[in-house]
Image 1: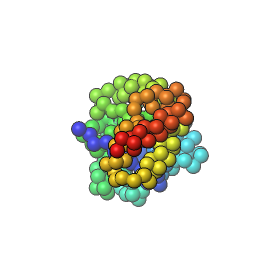
Image 2 (image 1 turned 45 degrees about the vertical axis):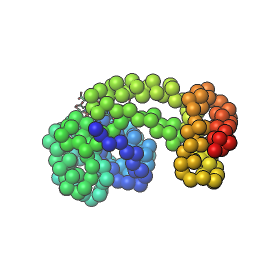
Image 3 (image 1 turned 60 degrees about the vertical axis):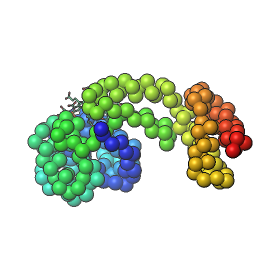
Image 4 (image 1 turned 30 degrees about the vertical axis):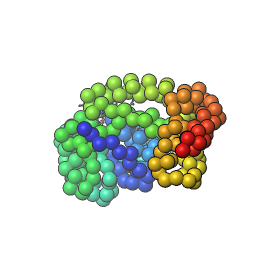
Length: 215
Ligand SMILES: C[C@@]1(CC(=O)O)C2=NC(=C\c3[nH]c(c(CCC(=O)O)c3CC(=O)O)Cc3[nH]c(c(CC(=O)O)c3CCC(=O)O)/C=C3\N/C(=C\2)[C@@H](CCC(=O)O)[C@]3(C)CC(=O)O)/[C@H]1CCC(=O)O
Ligand SMILES: NC(=O)c1ccc[n+]([C@@H]2O[C@H](COP(=O)([O-])OP(=O)(O)OC[C@H]3O[C@@H](n4cnc5c(N)ncnc54)[C@H](O)[C@@H]3O)[C@@H](O)[C@H]2O)c1
């Protein structure tokens, strides 16, 4: 089983070898996560070129050669060149300098895979098939995008406030857990989905009070 984790990449150095379609997909996700991204490739797509022009991406133009990664001290290295040899050499250097490697087409080099994702503010839903079918991940992602519309992004800050309030109530973490389990039910999801955020919040508040009354 692959172990899932949500990395904070803000300000972290990440290097992508290759500047084609796969590289572009990875670069977009990395920039969205606030990483400092460098692409090493002789040629890059128009979209990547535009990101370079906007100073969102650094581009080291040229083919990868052993030794190019070390100066960037990357945390993550993505081997997305259409040259198996270049990917293998980059993965070797990456491992030597302690970086984790993603190599879409060469699973033997890969330390981690990138899941498909739905971002709704702080709510992050991810889908992965362990490489069995990225296309199926995409299909599921599209379904989940419909089931979890942008109203969920708006709702999360309210949950944060409620959580802070519950933490201030008497009782330890077991009591807090009991209150949350009582307050959150499936109807809350339906209300948020329908954009009825006030009603969803009210439902939770009532549940929290009921849980208090039962104790
Ligand atoms: C989720 C997503 C994230 C991202 O890339 O950001 C992602 N691939 C996406 C799309 C996608 N990739 C491919 C297609 C064409 C259809 C098809 O071939 O199935 C489509 C669909 C499309 O584009 O329509 C081709 C493909 N992908 C890999 C190989 C290599 C191989 O299988 O050997 C080949 C064949 C290359 C060839 O034939 O040459 C390998 C990987 N792709 C992964 C992730 C990892 C496994 C994640 C998982 O198990 O779900 C893994 C293992 C490694 C990695 O990349 O980390 C992103 C979805 C974005 C979205 O939500 O829309
Ligand atoms: N297209 C996909 O969905 C997909 C998905 C997973 C894996 N793959 C595989 O991943 C690889 C890249 O796919 P793509 O569609 O992005 O290819 P692409 O042809 O669009 O891009 C390849 C990129 O690699 C660069 N490159 C070539 N040799 C290099 C080197 N020595 N050093 C640095 N950069 C170099 C090229 O300049 C180009 O920017 C291919 O081997 C492909 O089979 C493709």
